[in-house]
Length: 238
Image 1 (cartoon, rainbow, N blue to C red):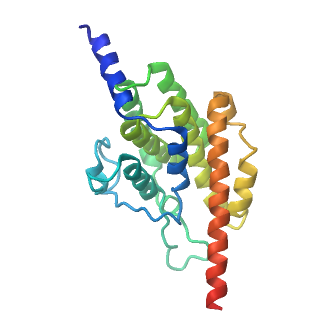
Image 2 (tube, helix red, strand yellow):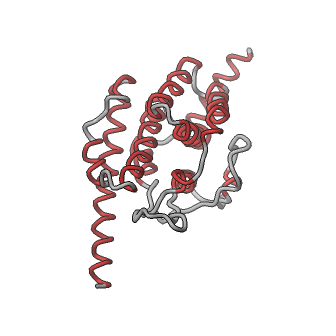
Image 3 (cartoon, one colour):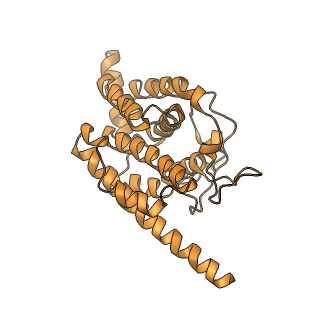
């Protein structure tokens, strides 16, 4: 059997063995927020390719989808503001830490993971273009989106449209928290606008747009619920 046929057969078997629906993807995205109860501790900064759950100290018996949600939550978890900060809103870890120096490295790791698995060279290039477009030149977002996408590729083997929608949603989450932290726009207002604003992802096809729209819709519902719970808690303490 030729190397090409062997690679095709192995990739086909992996796709049959491990797959996830669009709904599962949306559940993953809807759990990348401060109110998520799933947590994971990442062991140090990205230095090597993410190959297994042990890098995030996740119980190997944890169901695959739950494990990936935990990893994504770890990547996007909220940190307390720095001492002396004047921001009322709690700042996410990705806004406090500098990751721009990892942009090229994370992109290279992602590209290698894609082209050596189930994604064609042209599809891999499309995903990388989506990351750069979604990040809008922000190297921190490029680094984070590439790492997030790498997890989706290696752990869940998501289809290309879901990967594209995922990187746009990831970058949108960062933008939402940045604007909320500075008082420019509330989370709920941002996601209301995001439901109808898909100029960037639109250039990658309607399938990716629909996934991104559904993700934004779920995110808005989540933020509304979080706001209600927070207001109720404050009223109870008053």
